[in-house]
Each structure stands twice: as structure tokens, then as C-alpha cells.
Length: 158
Ligand code: MG
Image (tube, rainbow, N blue to C red; front, side, top):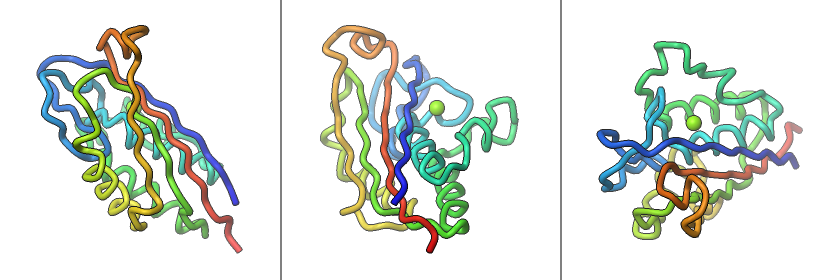
């Protein structure tokens, strides 16, 4: 068994969609970034790459590369899953937490699980999505940004 961790954060700004785990959530503010800034999918990508000892998201999809401008992060996740599977690993489970003050994530949780599980070609029973807040302190609590953490476990190549 192999374990990997991923952490990401993005700034909340006006005029951008709020995409979390491949699901667009109705919100006045969205996440700023080179790609679609899907903070949760980025954390999961890093957790998978970490467990496989394959570096990090910035190495594979540099934000200096015009190819990834406005990129759909779910497509990046699918690419990373293909790399991990090609190397002989199997995805055992992914657990993650989104830390966001508003809007509430819980109404979208099942849709996010299904979207992520579909992108990774695993059952929803292997994907868990948790939501937390910043308790009104720090950049998350002040509503300036959103953070996400993920842990992935892989079965090692036999
Ligand atoms: Mg990111």
C-alpha cells in the first residue's frame, strides 16, 4: 500500500466560476487561477502523484504553459489517473476535505463524489468528500480563498 497527501488553495474573486471537484457551485465569487482553479481536484491530483512518487501537479502541468490556461482540472485528473494506472498502481481510496466559509458545500457533496469517482474510474464508495469552514479566521474564514486537502492510497504494482 502507498499513501499520498495533497494540499491546495486558491483565491476567491468576482467574475470567475466556483468549480469544486468538477462541479460548478452557484456563488457570487469563484476561484482564481491559471486553470479552472478547481482547488479540490488539484489536491487530489497531488495526493495521487504523491502516493505514486511521481512529483507534483506543477511539474506535470506548469502554470507557465499556455496549454493549461483555463484547463478543465477533471481532464488533468484523468491524465494523472492514466499515468498512475500505467505504472501498475491501483486506486484504493481518496479522502478529502474542502475548507470554505461560503457557500455551503453539503448540498453538492454527492454530485462531487460521483464526478470525482467517475473521473478516476472507481466506485463512489472509494471517494469521501468532507466540508469544513475557517471559523471566520485566517484567509478561509475571511472568505478570501478556499483550501482543500486530500489523501490517496494506492495498491503498489505487483
Ligand atoms: Mg491549484
